[in-house]
Length: 330
Ligand SMILES: NC(=O)c1ccc[n+]([C@@H]2O[C@H](COP(=O)([O-])OP(=O)(O)OC[C@H]3O[C@@H](n4cnc5c(N)ncnc54)[C@H](OP(=O)(O)O)[C@@H]3O)[C@@H](O)[C@H]2O)c1
Image 1 (cartoon, rainbow, N blue to C red):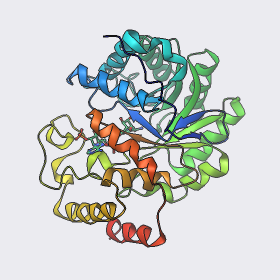
Image 2 (cartoon, rainbow, N blue to C red; image 1 turned 60 degrees about the horizontal axis):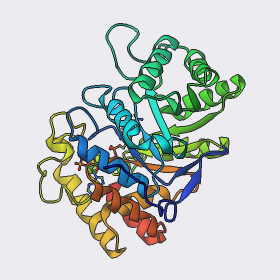
Image 3 (spheres, helix red, strand yellow; image 1 turned 90 degrees about the horizontal axis):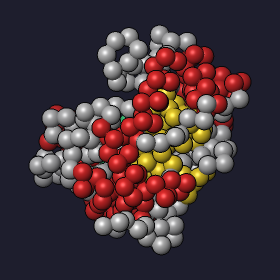
Image 4 (cartoon, rainbow, N blue to C red; image 1 turned 90 degrees about the vertical axis):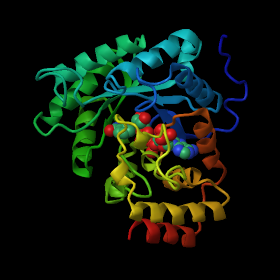
């Protein structure tokens, strides 16, 4: 059956400006790191993308290595685009990245011009695209001059293979340098993609402030701590969950007794706010004025529907914020 997007798709989503750019992103974006690979059910992958778009999620985040096997999430997404989403290409913001190991030999990872340009060409082929909307340096490369990595980003924009560029997991200092170099090259940094959640606060130590001062957007990954900031692990590790899968990045030992005690208390607080824990965790990252988007993952349509409802209550009392800190930072 041919997919026809909902006419209502722009009624309820919030769109936030990425820094001082012209680009608006949905407050909730969907990432394809897990659950869209060659090992995953293609029907569920299709349904999740369609439902997300119906709910106003216009931004889909990929990387060269997402799968497994590496590259297969881009192939899955390419098939969905070709089958049903092609007429809506101009309503979508599609990002990809290069930085982690993608092929053998000295040119298959990190931040050289050689690797980044070749990787983006491969990604475009896998997705059947002429350009991506955002291309990221996926991680800083301690061995390659930052000037080379940034000038490769500038080059892909000039070649028309990306409209905007971003950086991911760069420290505050590396971010300041990258922003400066990109400005001098004439291709401003659109956005930074760091990890951030109630359990992972590193960006509060200067990065968030720097991004706001510099007018750069911020889209945070793993805002649900890979599923730990939901109620799913409260009664053990469910079959089919990320922590149960050999290729899942969340390992069972991370769900320790201490973690579970924290999750239990946060779950109670979420209930008192009449939210699911997932909704409260997303509202919590989105409460920052400089936050452009919360980049979620999902393994079902129901999870996406649950998460989008976070937007119904994004405010926290000072007492609620204190309780969250008391639970999470001890
Ligand atoms: N730049 C980088 O280096 C980097 C690194 C990591 C991720 N990312 C990006 O960020 C995206 C999101 O990362 P993430 O998947 O770790 O994010 P996340 O939102 O913290 O975790 C997603 C997982 O949480 C569970 N979940 C989601 N909603 C739920 C709900 N309502 N109820 C119960 N469980 C729920 C699902 O786990 P189950 O599968 O167990 O159901 C889902 O796979 C990635 O897809 C990728 O695009 C970027």
